Image (cartoon, rainbow, N blue to C red; front, side, top):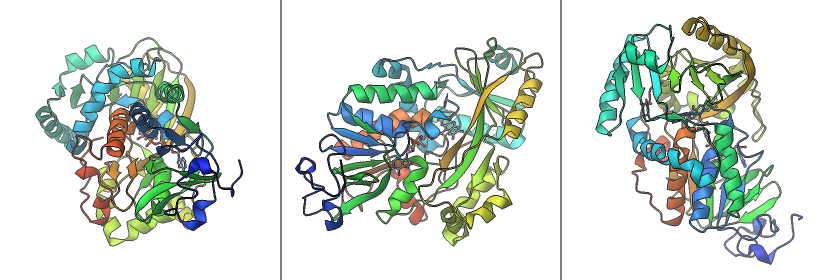
Length: 452
Ligand SMILES: Cc1cc2nc3c(=O)[nH]c(=O)nc-3n(C[C@H](O)[C@H](O)[C@H](O)COP(=O)(O)OP(=O)(O)OC[C@H]3O[C@@H](n4cnc5c(N)ncnc54)[C@H](O)[C@@H]3O)c2cc1C
């Protein structure tokens, strides 16, 4: 289908007088008939949103500039945790936690969901105190989080020889296989008749009279009166196309996968040094903890150097100073910034893999781990480490779900449901005030409250 010829099938978006003249004749039938909603981004958030929209009977077209799950959603550790989350996020995460046990049946496939708990061990007196306070907060939400003694740690992770001062457990937390989850959603969507367009980059969200009227892609225009923006690291650039700014800081982390070993644990374990979980098939997903490289580009540098940016973002850097690396070369490189839309280079750091392996050898002196593969993934973090989940006033019909700040895999099923409710009913049953996009502009974003 070529760009430049009007298609009556698309109706609004080609001939509609409210559509800017420049876009009227741009597209043909890219979406298999005019969709009710276009979802930009085929990560777990966009997929979950499309799933719930399709359930509501909407005709949905989902776009991804690469392949579904190409970015964070298949590169994460697979921890599904309420533990350590900011209080503002807990109600949504608790909802997600209740959805996970049913998800495999809903998608009709195996997701390797295991409800083995989330165990946090810390040898830092400061973190221990933070966690003590967090457990008190968690109790007010009815969570089963508690401080556990060494005998229980020994039962959860037999043979663990690492040193720690305090251990916290949330037994109702779990884990799943991110690749199977993305694949499961994508298959279910196709079976429900959702059009999935891969290698189709959204260039701009098109509005007319303060309403979203469609999406301009590299291949042409797709008209729709509802647009869901869930493009992860690509979201800020698309928001700019409707005149909105969103501060994001990108951080790249390395993850390794080992060959199968005899059962170590069913819990997701985070020691501060590293994080690990063991898949039901025995492989260990091994992460370098929260350690990562801050990616600096002109947009993030500009935000950081602004008075508001310094006020909002510096507390995040300070709080996570033990984990975040900022390389001078990266700052200099920002002056030769990436062109918008250019793919990120994401190479794993083998020094981080080696460090994680050394830690595992200290924790389990008799264990021999072979690394099967390693990869890197880039997190889209907001200054307060809370997502943006918002129906945008300045562009009616545009719902944004992005900036999941390194913990969006676990919460995604509930975010997908909320997005669908915002699109179809305009409300979601949750107080979404903490997740408004406008909080950054208005200076209302607080310092990060989550715990690593
Ligand atoms: C190393 C690592 C470990 C993590 N561990 C965990 C964990 O254990 N537990 C947890 O809960 N979370 C974890 N996370 C975070 C979690 O993976 C993310 O928050 C979540 O996957 C975000 O999903 P998303 O759909 O918003 O974004 P993404 O998965 O990044 O998807 C966005 C999609 O949008 C597409 N896109 C971008 N720009 C455009 C455009 N212009 N047009 C069309 N498509 C576009 C991209 O190709 C991509 O597929 C981790 C993340 C990383 C990187």
